[in-house]
Length: 214
Image 1 (tube, rainbow, N blue to C red):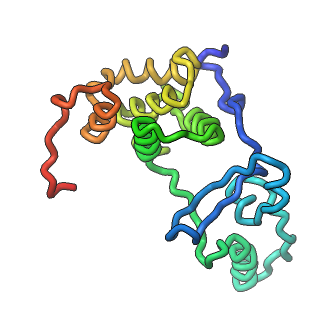
Image 2 (image 1 turned 90 degrees about the vertical axis):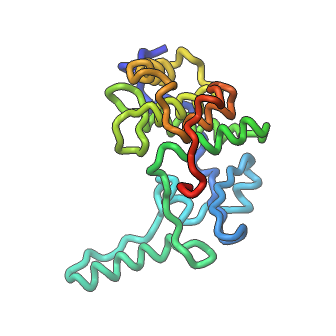
């Protein structure tokens, strides 16, 4: 197995991007990514331009004439943008900046024994491998942030819950980063709460938070 220094996140397992569909507008505004596991399902529910765009695939959008004026440039932009409109009329958008939201979801699913789909597991591990800071292997509070105890401890836990071997280059490098930062005992209140739910941190160690601050 590659060392943490030369590990390429592109080598992580991945799902078939042509099998993902974005369902929106049917559940009170929620965005739900659905993975179609058979050719028959995929044939019955073709990918939309919106799906392909968010999956990073070719949209097969028609070639637009080169703009020769600001107005034409704006019209070209609108011609493309309207193809990304969801079926219920809104425009979806990625919310992938914070690095402390995903751990809450996965830890909550784990402690409530809610099954985590295999396709989620594959893509979450691939996402975290690509979002780890190149220098030290940790994670910050957001995707552009320096590594912190908060981001590194929680996302390391996610990797382990989802089955990553402790000696996998991503896990080993993240763990070394966490030790260098002083270990998980220095994690802020939200992190202490999630770790306590896993029985990895004593409830007596949590900082009391006045309810009015929430």
